[in-house]
Length: 283
Ligand code: C2E
Ligand code: MG
Ligand code: MG
Ligand code: MG
Image (cartoon, rainbow, N blue to C red; front, side, top):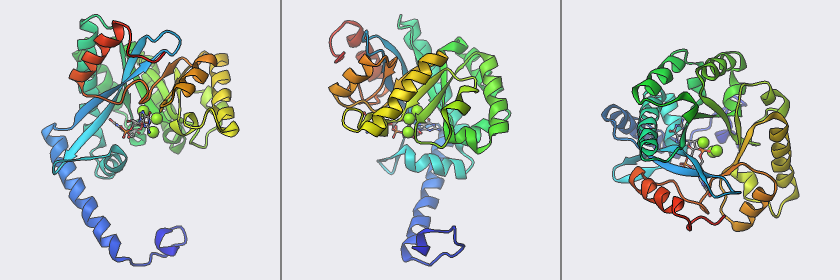
């Protein structure tokens, strides 16, 4: 137990630690090359209104191929944070997402795009200026950009986060609380932040129909959101009965494999065209 737990101040040597460390170092080196070379790619997952089937926007999710294999973001984003690569990585995703969204809008799809922000970014005082410049570079109105931030990111450094959130809000971009329900913040504290949207974590959505407790979290989020004029997005919708439940309870937007997996930009445009022509969407 001590081997896994550094809280007690003891670390027991395990041979696999060396292997883990070697892998992490190799990944970090590879990631640095990819960030410098701009070879990270971005895929898009649509957000859809479950009441009308209208496509509202898309979330940008970063992808990395290392030695011919995809490395999951849950593995390399923490490494990017440790290696101080998260700033350039985020700017690359932001720039790509804004360029792609400008293209969609130019083709007559009035969509918004969402970009995920790591906790560290919230205490970076240069962030707001960089976002403002990126919007201008792509001729994008600020309200077409949503920034997704986890509640734990905000609670890690509430004072500095608050300053950044206020500055971003002042810029006119929209702020979304990602993975809602998994953190430790109360609904009451979130209500004081200049946020526009909450995203209910997929671990709640997954059991919405079968598990009373998780359904209660979702219901509470929907009620609070309505009272505060927030938009509620449900992520990880995989089943038709989940979608039906969310629609009946006034959820504003859904995302999940039931609608579409995250897909590359070219495929996304094809998907959009088909979705607009009707059909395809299970709503
Ligand atoms: P997230 O922002 O909460 O994104 C949702 C994750 O759920 C994505 O995983 C998405 O592919 C996955 N997902 C979507 N629909 C479904 C579904 O129906 N079922 C299931 N089981 N999963 C679904 P992904 O792309 O692997 O990203 C994981 C996390 O990595 C993201 O969670 C986000 O926290 C982080 N991440 C991804 N891209 C970026 C980025 O550009 N910057 C930062 N800072 N973090 C990112
Ligand atoms: Mg997200
Ligand atoms: Mg999420
Ligand atoms: Mg997540």
